[in-house]
View 1 (spheres, rainbow, N blue to C red):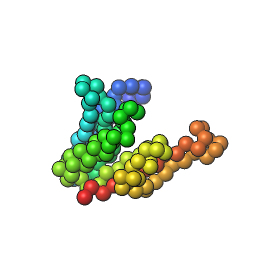
View 2 (view 1 turned 60 degrees about the vertical axis):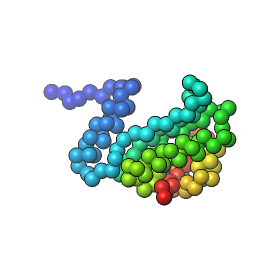
View 3 (view 1 turned 90 degrees about the vertical axis):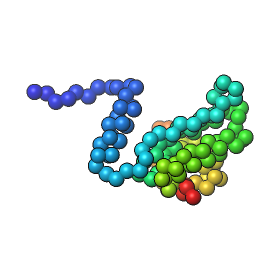
Length: 140
């Protein structure tokens, strides 16, 4: 008898994450494991948003985006402040994220994030010179 087959499953990301979290909840002490999604709207139009999740006392910022026409107005900082407050209520002590955008890395560093890792392509790897920064921040 053949075992399970592996298939491409676009759209099943939430199922995979929820299955893992359910197993972790059953086998290890937990903090509040749940997602955080925030948006800011200009009228009825979303102009920026943040998506993250809390787990084991950490807030993971998965995505933070601000519409180009609304940048440099403090919206990114406000989203992070709201996410930090929610994470603290859930018992989180720190936050972490990764980015491959040099301007975003500078933005996060200016807000007090500290680098803890980096993955970088060499000039002969595709795309040449691509870099991903990993940063963390204490939630005080």
